[in-house]
Length: 190
Image (spheres, rainbow, N blue to C red):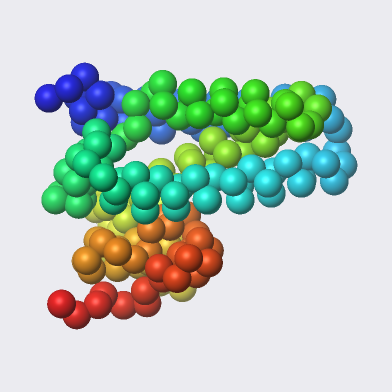
C-alpha cells in the first residue's frame, strides 16, 4: 500500500480533514467578507466558488475516479467495493487545491474576493463531505427524508453506487449530471 493510499484510508486523516476543511473555509470567507464589506461582490464570489466546486467534483468523479487506472481510481474503487469504509482526500490535497484557487482567483479579483472564492470552494467540498458521510457512513442515513435536500442528494448518489457507476457523478448537486446527460432517476437494470 502506498503512502497516499494509507493516508486516504486513515481515520485520523478523514476526521482531521473534515474539521480542517470547515475551519479553513470559514476563516477565508470571514476574512474575505470582512475586508470587502457587505456588498454584491462577496455574494458573487461565493456563488462563483460554489459553482466552481460542483464542477470540480463532477469532473474528478467522472473522469479521474472512474477514469484510467491511477491512485485516484484505485482508491475510489475501494469505496465502491465497500461504501462504509472511511476514505478521505489527504489533508494536503484539499489545502493545496484551496491555495491554487486562491492564487488563480487573485489574478482576476481583489484579495478579499479571492479569499471568499477559495474559501467557498473549500466550504462546498466540506458540505459534499457531509452529504457523502451521511450517504454511506452514518447509521441513521436511511432515515433521512427523501424530501429534504440531504435526502435527495443521498438518493442521487446511492443510484450511482447501486447502478453501474456511469451515472449520477455529482454528490453535492445533480446540475452537471443534467448538463452532461449522466443523470439517472433510478438504478438501471443490467
